[in-house]
Structures are given as C-alpha cells and as structure tokens.
Image (cartoon, rainbow, N blue to C red; front, top):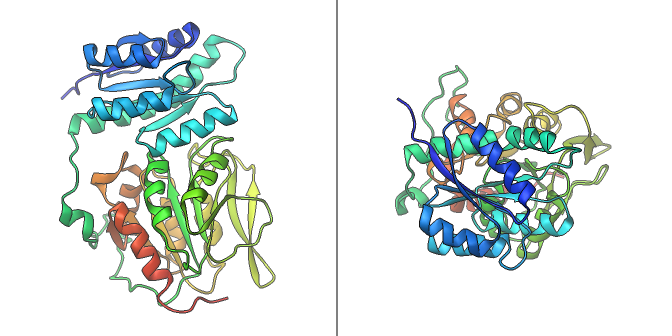
Length: 367
C-alpha cells in the first residue's frame, strides 16, 4: 500500500538555498513541496495556512532565527516536525545543537561546495534518509508512552538470529559505559546525561553521529548542565572515572590500553556503514580490553550502526541497555540490537540514567 506523501515547507533567508532545498524535496519520493518562506515569521504564517507535516528550517536568519522559530512551532503547531538546515560556523553549530535538544528531529549541514548542483546532490544524500524515516514514522503514527511504560524496564523478546541473551545477570562491576546514538540523539542525551549523578565512578563514552564542528558544541552545552565533566574526545587522553567523553564529529573514536590504563584514540579510518564516528568501531575496540564487563546503551538512531560491534563485545560479557521504541525519533539502531537478541533491558530515556547509575555504583569499581 502506498504511503501518503508528506507536505514540506522550506524556510531559508537566501533565495539560492530556498531553490536548492526545494529541488531536493521534489527529488525525494513521498514528499510534496507546499511552499517556501524567507524568514521565521513568514514561516509561522505559512505553517498555519498550509499545515505541513515537516519544516526544513534554516538555523541563522535575521529577525526570528531558527531556534526562536522552532520554539514557536513547538508551542503553536505540535504535530509539525522540524529538521534544521545549518551552516558550519561555530555560532550555527551552537544554535543547531540547542535546536536538537529543544525537539528538532535532526539536522543537515549546508554543503561547502563549488556549485549549486554539487550542493543539491550532497543535500539530497543527507536529507533523503531523514525525510524517508520521518515519513514512515508519521504514516504509522506515534503516541506518547504510558506512565507505566515510562517507569518500568522490561526484558526483551528473544531475537531471531540465534544470539539470544540467556537471562544475562546484571554485572557486579563494570569497567565503563559506552553509548551509541544517532538521529534524535542530542534530545535524548539532554535527558540522560544531566540526570546522571556526580558519583558515577566509571568513564562514559558517547558516539553521536555528527559532522565536524558540532560535537564540541554538544559537549560544551551538556557540560553546563551536568554534575559530571563532559568534553569532546582528544587523542591520547586517559579515561578517567566520572568523565563523559563524546567522539569528535567526523572522526572515529577507539579505546586502547596503555600500561595499566586506557586511553582514547582518534582515527580517520574510512567510514563504517557510512558513519564516522562509528559506534561499531568503538564497540569493537572495547572487546577484551577490560577485565570487567562494559555497560552499553543504544539510543535512538537510523540504521544499524553498533549492532555488529556489539555482537563482538557481547561475547566478552557486555550488559546492554536499549531505548524503547515509542520514545525514539528513529528506532533503527535499538531495533537492530533487539533483533539480534543482544538487548538485556529495554528502557525509557528517564530510566536509562537511573539504570546506568545503579549498575555503575553496584560495587567498588576496578582500577
């Protein structure tokens, strides 16, 4: 059965980008371009008149900028989704991360190319999967989880691939926490990371799919809100208890043993499953490198990055938490872990921080 096309409004203060993004929308199956707007106020007027399901919203605009416009959309048009279209300046990255934490579905960076045709092709490659995932989710409909679903973790059904978890026991101690997340990530990280108490005495590593220039802003904004220290990864730095390290945008993060300690490695190896940084790369690097198990957390995200690496890591006794479907912007990454039978607990975002804290503090941590 054919899925209904979704109506899209393009908002940008420059005529050339309104034209480029409009051409991209027309090239994506299952979409209908409803119109364009040159600033935030005009966008609000057209949303009221045209009722688009999705808005592609420029970040930096005179007057009502992208963040302020997003806030108005969220309060006045609750059923309208927003994808940010961002420049690559430091200010644009800061605004974009704030927008993602405030409820934008995802973002794409404006290409730095030599021609409109190249920009159109890059935007089509980036926006196509995001819009397709939104369209599929919108056609199915979504509802907020009940109070019971939000508060109660549950054990997953066995996976179909012969890799079922065999009632894995919660480990008495863990070496570190490794989190993988993609589409919808900044929003859920803004709920999970600040909720962690300051006495979580293990390192926490996060791979969030982002291009260069955005993860530093993400780390800085989370650091302001957290009891734990949050920073962007640096090559060669020592893993320390109570520190949250976010992989650099556009570069892989691995963990290496150095003497009795563990250090971060940053590499420019080719993308894995079109992802750099890659969750798979981090998870594989952790297999067998610690004496105690690794606690993994797979949050909202498109595709299946992390599932292969987690298959390897699970053979070394990892304990794996997964975000439940109803709160995911895209259920791809969590679904892949569940379908392989690797999920030990399926949780709401509100429960993830509590379980990390409970498991990390269960006993004294190994050095």
